[in-house]
Amino acid sequence: GAVVSQHPSWVICKSGTSVKIECRSLDFQATTMFWYRQFPKQSLMLMATSNEGSKATYEQGVEKDKFLINHASLTLSTLTVTSAHPEDSSFYICSARDAGTGVRAFFGQGTRLTVV
Amino acid sequence: DAKTTQPPSMDCAEGRAANLPCNHSTISGNEYVYWYRQIHSQGPQYIIHGLKNNETNEMASLIITEDRKSSTLILPHATLRDTAVYYCIVRVDASNTGKLIFGQGTTLQVKP
Image (tube, rainbow over all chains, first blue to last red; front, side, top):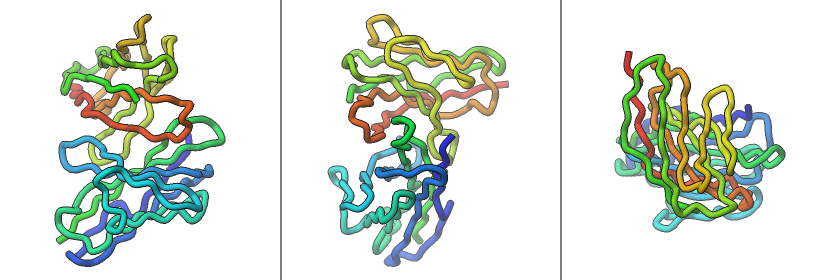
């Protein structure tokens, strides 16, 4: 099946710094990717939809200036958490759909962000 | 997309069939039923999906009632590695975006 890779798998950063998370579709092109956040013992919450070559669409309550999304190519989307604070510590997961084969969404392995 | 209701948790003995129910009484005619699972600290994994007919693949079977208001995911021979949170999601494929809205899911604990 299609593979979606996230990097890094985990990251620890100091409060006030920015962190970039990459999401790559390894064997297919993805015009649309999705970013989710998951707090402990909670379900995945959709943060934004990343569209190749255009601005991302953010879900209600998600600060677009804090969570910068760039989708510059058909195989790469990045999420940058700017001026991170401890409350941003979470599990961030991306997904992508292989438009060439159907509507199944494939997920990355997730990135554990800890802000200290 | 229609809302789903799942029991918060279930137990299953190793080697036995695990039957996970999902209610989606407000499902529309063009909405598919998808099942994903999430093993601890990993990204969700696709299991199976269907519209009207029952479906089977190498991982599981999906039984959808005739009125489509509920469905059951069946893991025929559960193993300890099937311990995970299972999510039932209904969505319109015609939207063609791959966007998924997750509920709380069912935590399946497979016990030796």
